[in-house]
Image (cartoon, rainbow, N blue to C red; front, side):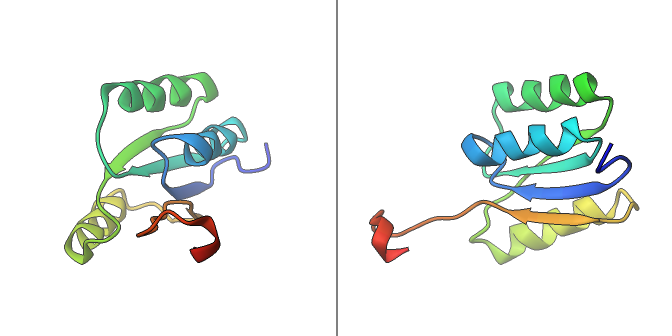
Amino acid sequence: MMLSGKNAVITGALQGIGKSTVDFFASRGANVWACAFSRTEEFENFCKVTGEKYNVWIKPVYFDLTSYDQIKSAVKTIQSDKVPVNALVNIAGTTKDALFHMV
């Protein structure tokens, strides 16, 4: 598989494009740190089931990308696994006024 044995950090993984990206990477053999803003039972289950389906590990990591301290803590969590990060996919994003043309 194209990404077999590689390890990816994917932000914005809780839903939509981010969640689909986690599935895409896993389906091609990549292990994933699935980064999300908040913990939900549904997301925890998605990570477990998807990892088992593709025989990879998917580890949820929860933090707020607007908090420097939480980002530092998340990085330490990822580094504690002592495996290389081969890919970073930044999908998470916010907007103050929700106007697309202002993004």
